[in-house]
Structure formats: structure tokens, C-alpha cells
Length: 587
Ligand code: PEP
Ligand code: MG
Image: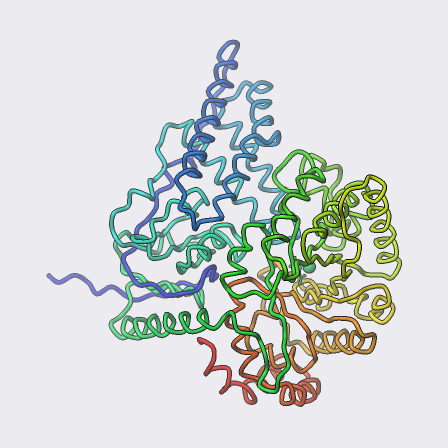
């Protein structure tokens, strides 16, 4: 009897790294660390249980050290593993587990499981999707301890000896680090989002990845033929002959396209009528400067500094911050580096400082509000930034300014930080451009008065859309309403651009809106001076800019502003620029 025909099916996830690969699935086993039994211990047994736990942590650390030592040079992101080492020492994870074993007399696996589930709920309640995904780091670290406790070896990714696509519930950065590019074509996972570390690493390795598929490990069997389309976030399981032919074709087209845009990424982003734009990069980690350079970034338009405040018991010292900033500034010199001050609900960033819960954290003590309440923490960072500014071109950017008095207070503190450095005779530079993020609707309304206090505005559409349209940026139930082309948003962006021109200050955009090709005519026509985005998108956006002219873009803006819906704006853009954009981008 012949085998029943296998049906093609399509899974939809989140594209984490672009590209297309076609190959056999390889399911990565989690090794049964999810099922944990509880049992009680007494007397001396408690002490030896604690020692067993300590030994498992020590082994996890040794494993990470070995992986770091053996990581390929080009995988700069190996430093992510250093944060895992720090997590292994964290009081909240390490100390708390020991405390539970001791106080409740339970086994180490059970205590660890409880601690991790508490930590998860702390991270899950965070407003920032980037921070939310740090819950995954906790999961990866605890999985490795758990494996050592229950005595199962982790799947050895480095030992895979066939050309395959990895299919996993989740891949830890440690596992991703072991990917051998000659064997692993790409990977897909059930968990993870756009900003998960695994995605960041896939981008660094330049292999296609789709994450957040929810049920990939149940829908796909070992050896199934799959197509991973990292450009659209689609995975096709058991593709039919026509799908295979179609995707082989798309794959080779995409590869040609990438070679083309990368070759020209160092060219200027100049429109056909001679207007030059700076196309800058958004980074979260100092090590990303390598990608910024490779992708032809004209500088760093947004350096998110939150990362250094996470996964640790204490705030970083001025020296530590200074060293990190200086590295970035020196590597990028003479190009600009825009350092954004801490944008976080600090009490949650440094979890053991937690003193209260916020019912509505997105509207709470976040970013600049937190810094103004904690001037010492803020001044430490300001001093580090001013000191780093002595080593290259630095601009400082303040997040979530919603009122004039805030920028006045901020500037006073900046002056105080500079004065203290002067007194101490430390090298610093106070002649740096000062900017604010425009990401709260009230800042749009009073942009004219804010402009008097700063050198530039940087429009943060990620939050501006969330606050203006009242849509939680991390809530998938309202994700379809999150529309950058909504008439309310484009009018706001226009208003900010007009005020900036009027007041003679720079106007930049560093929200994700700037990384989408079909938004570019609008942004060009409104007169943005600079766009900043994830490094990967830079070559494509530079090419788009080179294909457009400002005059046409300006008349497009006039028409677009008459539209009443996001759809209407999109259709207008497609009719006017669809042909040009499809010639220069990959769609
Ligand atoms: C934004 O809000 O658009 C932005 C760039 O900042 P973040 O995504 O870090 O909030
Ligand atoms: Mg923001």
C-alpha cells in the first residue's frame, strides 16, 4: 500500500532574521527538564541538597565558560552569555533558591522551579517587550541548572552532522552560539519575539529564523521537509512541488538582492534630487557596532542603555558605564553616537529594588520620570556620558519627555554633572547636542516650547503610536490597530517636523516606522534629517532613499494628509511608489 500523501501546511510566526532556507527538520530535545517532582528533606540532607544545587550551578557556569571560549570570532554576541553568568550569581535566582531549600526543606529542583516562575511573572509584567523577553534568559539559565540537577545532557548542537533546520521549543543563546554554519541552515522556535536574543544572534549569523510559532514542535516531525521564510515569518511544512519551485526561486532572488544591497550599503543615502539623509542604527549592546559598520550605518541614532541595568543586583558604576560608552564612541568615531538615557521602569529593571507594583506601568514611573526621582542614579549615567563624549562625537537623548518642566530639570542636572566633572578635573565634553524623544502625544502638542531647549527631536513611533492610539504595543489582541500610517500619527509626525524646521533644530526618527520601505516617501516628504533603525534594515532603506526624490515625496505628503484611514494612506503610497519600491526592495 502506498503511503498517504502528506499535506502541505503553513505555520505563521514572527520573522526574527531574514532569508529563506529549505531543508530537513531537526527537532531539538529539551531533555525532560519540564517535569519536576517535589519531595521533602530533613536535617543534614538539607545541607547536602544545597550543595547539590551549588554544584549544578557551578557546572552550568563551567559549561558557559567553555562555550564562550569556543565561540567563533564572528559571533560577537557571545557576550550575551556573560549576562547568563551574571544571572547564575543573581541573588534572586541563586540566593532565593537556596533560601527556599533551607526554609521549606524541599528538593532543589522544586525550589528552583518556584523561583523561576516568580521571576517570570515579574518579567512578564514589564512594559518593554525587550525586557519581557529577558524572561527567556532566566528560562535558559534555569534549564541548564535543572539539566545538571536531573542529570541529563543538553542536546549537543555542535555535534549535529547533517545539513538541517533546527526546530525547537526555544533555543538558548548558549545553544545558538554552537550553531555550525556549515550544517545549520536556519532555525524556528515555538517561543520568542522580535527582540529575543536568539533572534539577535540569528541576525548576527545571517541565517533565517522564525520565532513565536507556538506549536512548531508539535506540528513538525523530525526529517519533515520544511521551508523557512524569515522575511515573512512563514514556515511551510511538507511543501508541495509547486511551493518548492516557488521558494527555490524566491531564495535565489533574495540572495542576489542581499548581495546587491550590501555591496552598495556604504554609498550615501542621497535622493535623486540631491538631498542627503543620514541612515543610522539603533543598538542595545555595545557589540552591535560591528553590525552597524558592516551594514553601512552613518552613525548610531539610538543607543538603548537599559541593558546594562538588567539582570543584576546593583546599578552599574560610573566607570563601568563610561568604559562601555567609550568603547562604542571610539569605534564609531568620527560618526555620531546618540546615547539615550535609561528608559525603564527602574524598580523593575533592578528587580531586587522592587518596592511596589504599578497597575499601569506604561503610564507610570518610567524613563525620565524615574531618573528625575532618582537624581543620583541619573547623574551617574550623565557623568559617564559626558566623559565618553571626550572621546568622539556624542549626542545625548532623553526618553519620554512629556512636559517642558521636565527638560528644564534634566538640563539642570546635566549642568550639575558637568560642573562636578570640571571640579574633579576629569576629562569630559559638555558641548554635545541635546535631544529628546518625541514619543508622548503631549510632547507633540508643546513641541514648539520644547524645541527652545534642545538641538534635536527624535520621534519614537514605537511609543508614540501606543500612547496616541491607546494601543498597548505588546498586546497581540490589538496589534492590528497599531498602524504607523494612521492619519493621527502622520499628522503628529508632520507637526513635529514642521516645528523643528521652524525652530531650526534637527528632526530624526528612531522608531520602527523608519525601517519600513513604504513609509519612506512620507518621511522624506516631511523633511526628516535622519532615520535610525535596526542595523539589518539600513542597506535596504538607503537604497529606497536613493530611488526617490523629495519633490514627489512632498506632493505625496500633501495628498496623504487628506486621507481618513491608514489603509487610504497605504493605497495612495502603493499607487504612487509601489512600482519604484518593488524594483528596489525584496517583496
Ligand atoms: C520608540 O518608542 O519609538 C523608541 C525608539 O524607543 P523604544 O522602542 O526603546 O521604546
Ligand atoms: Mg520609546
